[in-house]
Each structure stands twice: as structure tokens, then as C-alpha cells.
Amino acid sequence: MNAFDPRRFGARIDEQYRIGKAKEDYSLRHEIPFPHQDRPAFRPSHSKLTPLYETLKNKGAVYEDIYGWERPYWYAADGVAQKHIESFRRTTLHNIVGNEVKGLRQHAGIADMSPFAKLEIIGDDAESYLSRTSSNHPPPNIGDIVLSYFVGKNGRLEGEATIVKLDENRFYVVYAAAHEAALLNWLKEQRQNDESLSFNNLSEKIGVILLAGPASRKILADCTETALDNKNFRWLSGRYINVGGVDEVLALRVSYTGELAWELHVPMAGMLAVYEALLAAGNKKPVHVGTAALNAMRMEKAYRSGHEITNEVTLAEADVLRFSRNKRFQGDTISAAPVTKWGLAYLSVAETQEGEIIADPQGGESVWHEGQAVGQISSAGYGYAVGHALAFAYIPPALNKIGTKLEIMILGKRRDAVITAQCVYDKENLRPRLGN
Image 1 (cartoon, rainbow, N blue to C red):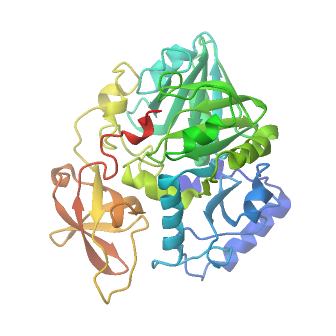
Image 2: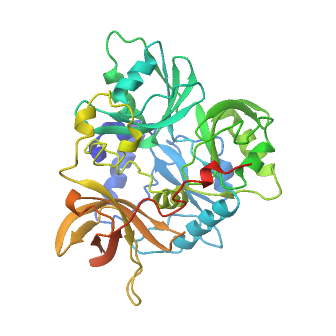
Image 3: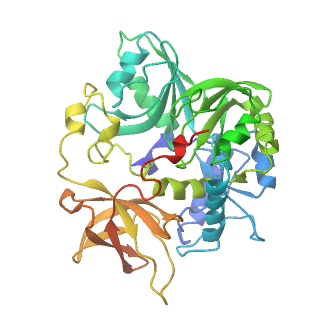
């Protein structure tokens, strides 16, 4: 029901916007609803912009709208026009995104990820509150980072979050941009009357620059005096550092790409200075990457997205019980119960046969087994490291076994797929932990 939730809007909404967007919607009612269809009306006039907006636009950024933010989706290159490419088929965008992935993995990539929702939970009861409402142990020490899931009393998932302990009784929570208002509303509803805690929404005050790739440590080291080796700045830790002369940059050593990486959470006023410092560092500049490339890389790592983590499923159904070490949270028994209805499968999708239309799953396609529809694709992306598409699907648990052969309906034809082990890239997860 997310498409009907009034909390899905993040743009500046006024009378002009409401009327204009209604007209835009009406004008599209007989148009083909392509995947990831762009709706440009009142953008960027009513959008939320970071200080990097014009700079990245001049670099070729093709922007997408996410909760009212303008976020780079991909970067125009090789003479391709700087505008959205919409199709059910594989297009020239395939190679452009592939080059972004290649550039990041061979050297480094930089991305503006500022639309993340960013929230502080502060107070004497902040830790016990997080322990009750989320599946994982709250980070125990200052600077520790954990991935966790917020769970309702009914055992269903309300959202995924990266949680950082900044100080005693002070936690920094980062989650999907599209759920900023909805999850914050839910979190406030979970607060009990006798609990001493408050919520500080920093989403529009803090920007995020992602720096990832094997050269990311060297690039960042040229911009800061902080030691970045594994001993001094370990994987899944964070601290405030100075970058390019900008103080109070919260550097988090986490990775959505499956590579060595830092997320730099920067006060908005310092975004441009940090970005320029990173681009000036080293002998070779990082490639600019958009969310299309990041989606391809997260699919190779089998990282769930908001299409998999919804309030329709439990921890067990989403196959994320490994992030649920604390068994004393609300809804724990229900959420960890054996799967009976559906479970999340990870699929390798066969390439198109010669002579057929070249297309990839986009999400929403039906999944078939022995002539019967048995499930649905939740999200998908092309795996450039393996040379074929990958997809997540919710299917009956009896079928959810590695090696099970399935089919996906793509453009009216069934395409072979097989359930594969998670994940297909750097299975031992060594690259984010790269040594000095």
C-alpha cells in the first residue's frame, strides 16, 4: 500500500504543485508506464537539493526523484543524451551503468547519497528503546555500527536501518529515503509514556557522500589526518573526522557496494568542500556513480532493498534472521517463526536467447514452476560480475531451495532462472575489509 501512503511525498507541496502534479498524472494516464518512469513536473523547483546539485548536473548526472530529493540515477557519457532512457528492453544505459560499476571496482567511485533519512535518537532510555523495537543488539560501544530491522508487535518488518552509537544515550539511525516520514512516524508511536528519549530528524541538515572502491582509503587519506588503516579505523565503525578542512564529518566505514568504502555524513554547508577535496586527491579521480550502478552491485551482494523489506513480511520470510541476535524484542517469536506462506529466494536469471528481444527483469514479474505461477519478483538488477541478471522473489518455502529451477515471465515469455546461493560476488565478504 506504499503507493497510497500520503507520507510518501517529500517535495515542497503547495497549491501550484498539487494542481500541476494532478495534471501531469492525468496526461500520463494513456501513456506506457515504463519501468522507473520519470515525472519531471515541478522538478527541481519543488525538490530538495544538495549543494552538489549543479556541480553533478554539469558532470552529466541524470536525476531521479526520491522522496522529493534529486538524486543522481546515472551519468551521461559517450555522447549519450543527458536525459532519462525509458524502455522495457535493455538499452544503451546498460553499458553506461556497467562502466560506472567497473570504474568503482577497479579504482574508486563517488556518489551523492544525501537523500538517506538520518535520525538521532537521544535519551536515557534510547538504548532500551532500540533493544525493544529492533531485531539486533544496539551497538554497545561508542563508534560501533550495526545493521538492524525495526519490527512491529505483529512480527512484521517496518524498516531496515544502520545504527551508530555516537555517545552514551545517543544513537544515529540511517534508513531509506522513501521511508523517512513513515518510519519516523512509526518510531514515535512505539515510544512508551514513561520512556525518556527524543527524536532529532537531521535528514535535510546532513548530506552524504559515498566513496567506495579499492583506492578509496588512499583518496580519503589525502584529505584527512585521521588514520584509516584497519587497526585505527575498523570495518563497521564510525567517528567524526576533518575532511578537506571541514570539521564534524561523520565517517562510517560501511559498504553498500561490496567494496572498501566510507560514507561521509557532512553538514550541508561543507558538502562542496569535501567533494572537491576528494576529487583533487590522488593521481586518478574516482568515477561518478548513480543509484543504477549501486543497485547492480547490491544485487550481486544479495543486499535487500525496500522492495524486500516491507510490513508484509517477517524476519524469517525476508531471510534476515542473522541480523536478529537479540531474541527479546517485540514480535520476536512471530517474526522468527518457521516460514509457511512465502520466503525470499535469490535467483540467477538466464540471458536472452539469440534472436529474442533483449530484456531484463525489473520487478513485479511473475515466477513460475512446472507451469504454475508461484510467486513474484520483488526487485532485480544486472550482475556485471557474472554476466546475467539477478533477482529476489517471494515464493512458497517448499520451492525455496538452492538449485530449484524456475521461470520468470519477461515481456510475455518465460525465462529460465535458478535459485542460487547468496551472494555471487566476493562471497566471503573480504573486499570491504581490505587491509592497508
